Length: 261
Image (cartoon, rainbow, N blue to C red; front, side, top):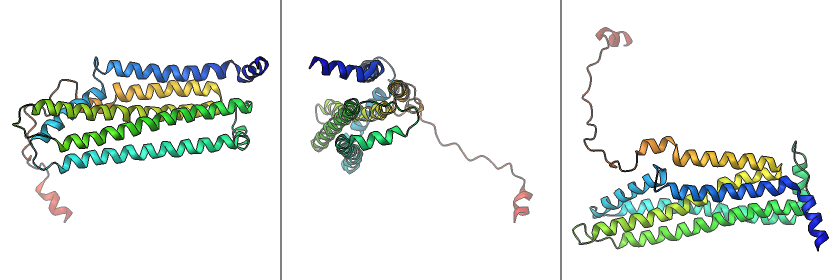
């Protein structure tokens, strides 16, 4: 058994050991960083939570809440698409485990592709299986929480009922938690795409993982959408909203229109 383990480590190589460790370090480390910074900095997740609070407060004033149910239904449909995609991806990866030789022949035609033993190839496939199984669980838990949100919307009290404000905050928190798990599932998709680089070369996995971290960081902390939604603490509907500007008199010459005719 000891000899088999030595042969396995010899076939794996230092780069193939360091690349997955770097992958998990970046994935788990960034997730912890993003979750902690959302309460300290102006992040997209924190700002969208304020919009959810405004949504729930506005919902209290509506007698007909078909619009709110339609929004939840749209969100559920989007999550169902990604959850179904994760199942299909896992099924395809399990099928690849049974036909590794054919898949390895395809990789051999890629320039600079590293040739590895079959056991190392199986580890690469299992890494992708792990990533997309995680994504599936996150998406399905998000689906369940949005179903809970639909039940919560059915129990919305009248706006003048005591405790209605606390109820709206609780409903917004349910929506935010569901959205957080959806974001984690999407993040797993991004890192799953980076894990594809390991099939070509371990250094490509390292570079792709770093690139994914930069992409998700920019989208959550530096995206243009965050600037459009505003900073944390700003009113969702700005006070003194811009009024429509009066029509400006045309500076076009009266003879130009007649000339076009």
